[in-house]
Image (cartoon, rainbow, N blue to C red; front, side, top):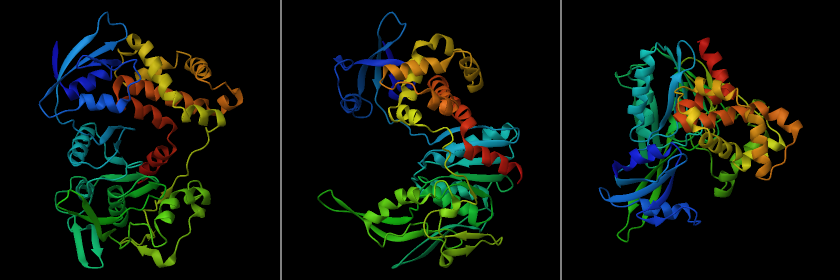
Length: 414
């Protein structure tokens, strides 16, 4: 029986294995809720749980004894070269290890000769502020303001860049979208307001409150808002919420209705929220970070058929089914380019259409022609992720990522 730590077994399970037994209790084929299975796997640190797994093609079940431990949360999803001198780093959240992950990724990209950097914060809802300010510090000159906080009863506190920056000469652009929030907005705002680089995408969420937690003897706690975060030019990151919580949470959908996701002109700028950067660039406050280069939401491959298979998760599910059925052919590949080259010759589209039909979505061939490129690229990216993780997914999905394409073209001219 193999002895392993839990993160080692979880990594191994990505290879298509299924958990059958947990401590000799059957969990497969009995309609057990996934939350119950997770509770069975969890336990005090350094205790042991036995897991029995099945892998297609293996003659017998495999047993592992897992020593429970802390499972590290990684926040840099991928880092790779998008062209000869430009690197791309995707940060999914800001956690304790984010700064060190980022610097390790930068070091590896530097060894490959990159001089320009695209930092992708799309979908990043924030996290630990210090991770964002430490990354901003790498790009700024000593003494430049990164962010400051101020409240009605709290004096202003400034966070300045130090002399530690290793990326002061590197060209940089930041990618953002509607879910980019909090620490993501701090980093994007610091780069934009110091004229250090460009922000590309769509207006960010607008979450910039400083809260302090007060714990009570009964175990409950109160979080009290004491200040707000401001960008170096003085813009409040926080969206207004004077009209109540309901309006605050509905504002996101109202942006869609107004057409803000598709047309920059639909965004109403308030001259009272007009700020000027040291380089003379006009930036606007009012909540969130407005990008320097607006990229509308890409709907070119959208159709009713696409929306149906996407809502049911069929592209993801088909990719797993296909990977599992063809693992012996796919396992020999180590790069996204190799995997995509192989998949190009496998007639994936007819197989997917048949799979979707069996799952209750009949084909609409007019819609399929509209969405074929997006469908195929997404399926290939998911298959590649099943084989080599995010190093397979992102380079393939990048081929239909219009915001990233704009960023690559933009940074080439900087």
